[in-house]
Structures are given as C-alpha cells and as structure tokens.
Length: 459
Image (cartoon, rainbow, N blue to C red; front, side, top):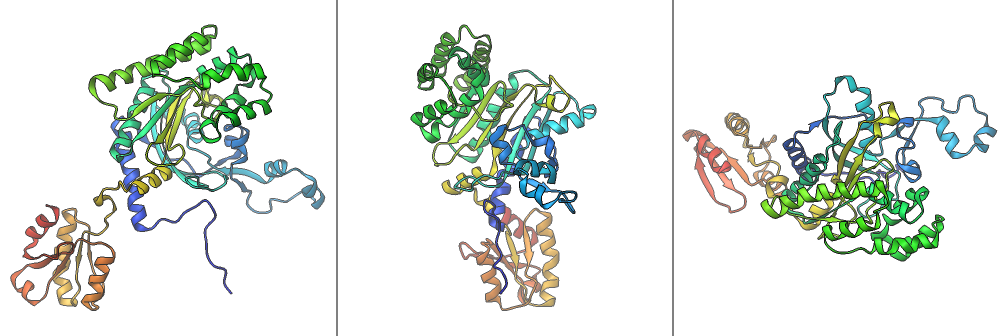
C-alpha cells in the first residue's frame, strides 16, 4: 500500500485563495518599502555553514537546518569513528551548507561580497523564506517568509525613525492595531554594568526577553540558574517593573545609569528617536499606533548593538509579528569592520494568521477571475475570444471556459470560484454584436457591447 503523502511538520501548503491573501501582504509591504527608497535583492536559500554559525547565539546555532554534503559524505570515516564522534563534530564534517536562518546575516554577507558595486548608504529590502528547526506550535513554523528592510553604511538615527514610520504605515494599511515596542541594547549593557554583572549581559538579556512568555518569577529563576548574584537580581527588579510614559521611563533610567557611559549613550539615542516620533505623533498625527519604550525588550540575537524593536498585535494572541534593531559591526565578521546597519523584519506568516483571524482582507485582494465566458460551442467561443482579449487588455481578469459542457456545470464552476460576472453569447447576442452579462451576486442580466461590458465590470 502506497504511503499517504504529507509535508514536514512546521510547513504549510497554500491554496490559490490563500496565495491571493499572501500576495496582498507581500505587495502591501513591498509598496511601503519602495515608498521609503528601498530596493529589492535576493540571496540563495542555502549559505555556507560557516557564514551562519555563531551569528545567532548558542540557541540559534541549534536551530540551523544543516544540509548533508552531496555524494558519499561518510567517505574516509570508519564505522567506529561515526559511532564515537559527537553529533556537532559529525555535522561539521558532513555538512558544509545550511538553510538560511534569517535574511540579515545573508544580507551582511551580500554587502561584503558586493561592496565594490554598492552605493552607501545601501537601502535594501528582501522578501524570501527562512528555515528554523524549531518546535512547531501556533504561530511558529519551521519554514516561513520574512520581509526585511535594512540600511547599511549610515550611523544616523533618522534611519530608526524611518523604520518606525514604515512599521506604523504597513500595519495601518492592513488595519491591524499594534503596539510597537522599542528599547536599546546600550541601555541593557548599562543595566548589567550598574548591577555588577557586565560579563553576564547575554544571559541577562536572554532571560528578561522571556518576561512576557514565562513571567517574572520564572525569569528570576533563570537568572539564578545562569549564575547571576541575588543582589544583582534584586537591583534588577525595579527596572523590570518600571512603568510610566516613555519620557518618565527615560528620566528614571537616566538616573540609574548616570555612572554608565554606554548606558547614557543608549538613553540619548532613545531620547532622539522618541523625540522625533513623538513630535510626528502629536503635531501631525502621522503615527497611528502606540510606540512604547519597554526596558525588558532584549531581542535575543547577539548582533544588536543599539535600538531594538518588536511589534505585537493587540487584537490577536500571537507572538511578535515584527522585530529588528541596530547592528554596528555585523559585516565585521566577514572582513568589513565598522559598517553600521539597522533593519527590521516583518513575519509574513504571522501577519497572514493575524489578518485571517481578524478577517481584514479586502475583497478585491482575494478574488481571482472577475469574468467568465460560457462555452456554447466552437462558433460561439470564436466570437467570445476577441471580447475576452479586450477585457484582459482593460485589466479585467478573464477566463473562457475551455470545454463545451452543460451550462449548469460551467455556472457551478463560476460559483465555486466566486467569479462575480459571467458572459453569455448565443445566436441572438452574436447577431447584435453583443453579450449578455450576468452579475452572479445580484442575478441581474444586461445585454452589452464590448465597451459597455468593460465599463460595467470596472465601474
């Protein structure tokens, strides 16, 4: 008996209707990116493994999908060596390539590899799938699309301002209410300094970044397990619990970090970014969504060095749907030090799930064919084909039913695909040089010439 076909866990098939919805997302995101002067690139699905390893922290390395070398990847190894070698060492020997984990590291590789061709600052966007060997669950997939936008070669914080406006514009277009959270890794570094745990900055940021998911007590337990002193954990509590307006939070944290040079640098950066965005929000109404300074936001990836961002949908229970930040020296790992960059990534699959749950897709975004010509036979079809061509030239998505089967079957096809208009041409219509256009929603029928038909459908 043949094995029942299926797909790997954490992946999905998408029907034509679902792809119409996804393309609505991609097209909306793309249009806003281009509105701000970003240009599109693409990179390969797989990268050399040395390009990816060590860029996402220890947890990220474990989630990389590694690709076995082609051919006899066991060549030169005995059975005993295979049996007694650790998994990580075997992977290093057998796998020279891996599926990309995100779009940022491949972008950094692209910048270094093509540096002679690029005009800096380089503003790029990229819409492609990524893969993570994560445990599949609601809103978390092993294969998913990211829509990334980045600027490299500029230290200006105006880039962060642009990214916040891009984020606000995209979700406003989707009709999704979101909260945009912002923090700064320099502030977090300063916090680690003032509580006396500078060397534990990674452990601290990884732990407090889980606050929304596991709660304060579990975060404190994880900090203890990571060797953070009890006194330091105690000092951290008022910072984690800090409330008030963005300005009030900055004033409070500035007092706490007054002896940390890097911490105060982070505070200054936040004052600048929030100051401009606050002015936009209050004086011109250009921001539609809340921008919140969240001092527990850490973003686990180790390459962030400045402002960090994360976006949560307010009306759907799902994880982060957008995130990113400033990385001052990501290209340095590829031999091009000192090149600053900042970017943000939109999780297309989570946005897709949010729009589905809230039923926010415009009707025109999910409709396929708009006009179907019924096939009554060869002579009638020959009459309809030039009219169909004229409709397509006018931008109307048009089909001519290929087979001269019973009209009931053809009408059922139109209903099943939610085609709003059906055109019929028999002896009478052909004699007058017209067609009968039926509105499948209202049932209304009209006898129209070609120009009238196009105007009726487009109008």
